Amino acid sequence: MAATTDDAAAPDGGGAPGWASAPGGGGMPGEGGVPGGPEAGAAARTSPQLAAMPEGWTRALAVVAHPDDLEYGVAAGIAEWTARGKQISYLLATRGEAGIDTMDPAEAARVREGEQRASAAAVGVTDVRFLDHQDGVLQEGPALRSDIAAVIRALRPELVITVNHRDTWGAAPGAPWNTPDHRALGRSVLDAVGDAGNRWIFTERMKKDGVGPWDGVRWVAVAATPAVTHAVEVGEEAARKGLASLLEHRAYITALTDEEPEAYARSIVDRALDMYGQSYGGRRAVAFELHPC
Image (cartoon, rainbow, N blue to C red):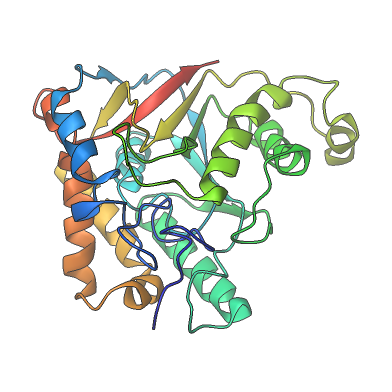
């Protein structure tokens, strides 16, 4: 089977948050499954030391565009947090239905939703929600913001997690271009956090849902940006769970590459966790650009 280009640069947006190495690829842009390719890897090795992610929270919401967007590294950090008793929910804007070229979108949506639920369970997440926006054509704006804000108001997280909303996957000239879905989703997440706390924005939706405003989000953590500031250390068991979570996306991985799925997944997760070691005391970690709220 063949994957489409959204994870790479077109519809779907599955297979890592647009972290593909080429059209039809999943993983991350550039070489070796590293966001932004070798330029980003070099930047990571010379970047300033990263601060530790804050731990003063109990509930988090991870919001992404497609199934498997979290599994190319971030899930290992989530496994670390759930093992510490943190409560984390997933919210996906689409079901990644446009992500497998040889699979009918309706079937792909069913398959990929099931894989995402199994993937979340592998890292201790049981609450997985979908918004039913159309894969590949996410629109930044009030409709998407309203849907995200409604879930923030309902779940009342202190930390919101998402993936790169910037134009590219690296800061160097010629860095791989990010996909439309990821740009629209990430920017809408940042806006929706503010919307959720304002009782005069999306008021009718708030009344309909029977919830109040929520201004208790203290941070938004954005993974895979070229401007990371913080990191969470990932131990051996969390790394194992992160690998298992990516391997649950077998239909997508099989469509994406002729490489043996476990070898492919291991190379991606290992590179993602090792990328910022020199900026975080030699420790394996997931890094984020942290926005205080």
